[in-house]
Length: 114
Length: 110
Image 1 (cartoon, one colour):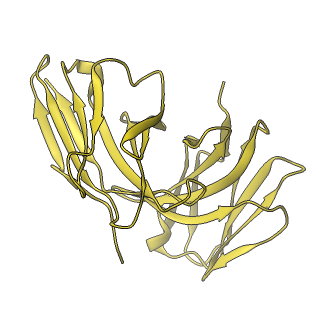
Image 2 (cartoon, chains in turn cyan, green; image 1 turned 120 degrees about the vertical axis):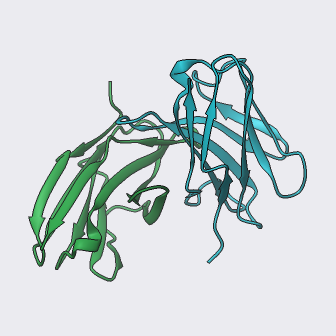
Image 3 (cartoon, helix red, strand yellow; image 1 turned 90 degrees about the vertical axis):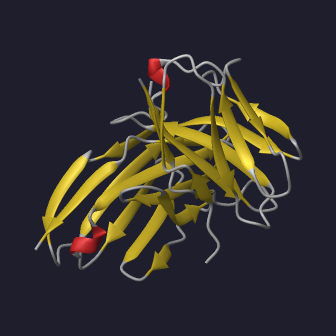
């Protein structure tokens, strides 16, 4: 069964450094998403992306965050200057040709900011 | 204020028991409600519900939506230790992001 893959599984970074989280969505999906889950808290929406542009973003997704689809398969989340509070599990998700389809999640990247 | 509320937050049952997990949501621009199972990592999709009163079933799991009550239930019959997980409820309302509840942590003991 096709799945969303994320790399790395765990990223440790010094505060203030830039980090890029990578995702390969399911191949025929057109809508892509990033969510995060701080330890012990709810899964929270960050951003959705369609047709090479952001379609929605949450209040969390401020100027330090950016997303990109650099080629036909990868979808990346960049955090420019990491803060301690960015420590969380980051999930990538994708859905098929219409947004009103279930989103399928990757295994996540655990980001630890020191 | 939480838009998606799940109950109970945790539950411990014995193998073979039947459990019912609850989820309530706000009505604003409701489109659909989804259930996911989260074990160690990725939330795994279980059901998507858009119409009231129509049960969705997969093996021992089933779910139904009640639009009048703004709620959904997830039933698991004949529970097994492999059902131990956090069960997440999320809604697509208004925009196309998923809004998640806090989850119900289910522990099934032998």
